Image (cartoon, rainbow, N blue to C red; front, side, top):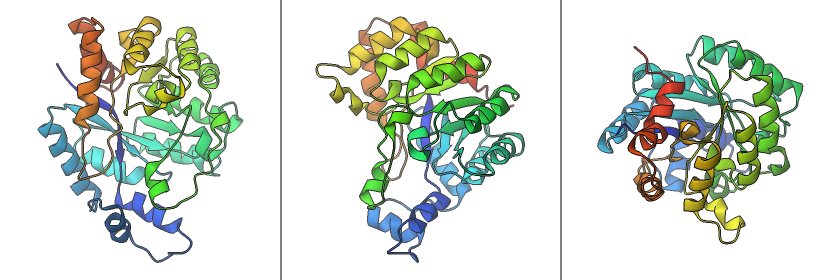
Length: 301
């Protein structure tokens, strides 16, 4: 069975430089200092990090992966990685709709850098999904077939920010999957991806997916948000998602990010066991773990 990972973070040198600039008490800190503090490996160049990712995918039998530029303005790093391994990597990028040049950056990232996933974090950037600035970004996606919109909903926790003592003033009221529904209905040709089954807003995510067939769910991470609903299990989450969205709109992901931890095989093992235990057919499991990704993001060449 082909395994594709729809959700990995590309923690580039630019990513760590951005975090360093956000620490006002340590303005001269460099990325290697941050990595030593975290006990993570330094990323090196974008090409070197791309090579490491591909070696990691090879080691685990993973065919392709989406890599997310995990701070606004880091499109170039992921674009370089994708250009280095175009048959293995798909580039996503985070955009802050409140930035004056947001729309121009989105056009450039898609048209010039060949990136294919626009990532919105409304709770992080304090821009409601109904805002005209978000609509303009969705219009750009709609005019460029093959581009998807990834919208983080529900609870948002960025572990690296907490470990570095950086403020995380997120407004989680802005990450409602029902607001994704309004966008999805307005732009039916655009695939919308809601990660982590809605990250605590499962009910709303399923309602949205039931009303708009262009809404997809990614299964990534350990999905620790289930603790907010007493008695809920990840098995039950999968069964509910399969009953509402069906296997053709679930995208397997791990939420892998830094090295030396690398690709999170434990997430795959857990989710594969759940899917097998739910009696999902081999054909449908193949869609979840690889086929749906290949359909949305056909391999280059």
